[in-house]
Image (cartoon, rainbow, N blue to C red; front, side, top):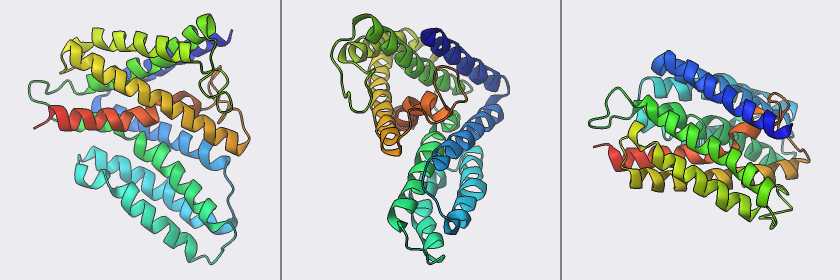
Length: 273
């Protein structure tokens, strides 16, 4: 039943992305903006906050999040690439410090910064793919999102299947008991083959598509591992309960959070002028 739930959730995500595709650049930005909002809410809900954090949190939800996606909409790479990791990093602790509440100050602000980086900055690299200008690929940039989502999400499903069928040796049992070396190798290689087979919807050659798919699959796996470590630290099994078989939005997107920025920069620096 859990496998069926996982596959159904995977198809739902693919369906939502396909629907967003139908509305072009605007649809994709709106979809991932909403996903960022849900993911941010899940993360912040599970962290320790105090009344003195409310102003900083309001800035995160009502200023930083919409501003990041607005910058992507106007295709200002120089700003959306540094807005959160530089200005968000600097000004959030300033806002909190002005409230003069030093109780667990470092951990409180660090958790908010992590939430903003993961749920907004990292995830926003998915719609940012449509802003890239690739010679000979004009007007088809949205297919890069299809490649990323299909490859990374299929890797998650295939790692689960390979692990269930052949899993014997745990990768990191203290973090994620279900992740096995057999599942990792089988899932990553299978999904890499899928990525190579999808070369025709990208500006990549089959070999390039395979190499890129392998890279983002590994980043996706490590993303899942890091997010599992955070959940263990917070004392929860899932980030939420929105998606059947997966938990919350962050449970479904944990691999995308780490793979999207890497994929974006591989494409930007390897395939754009």
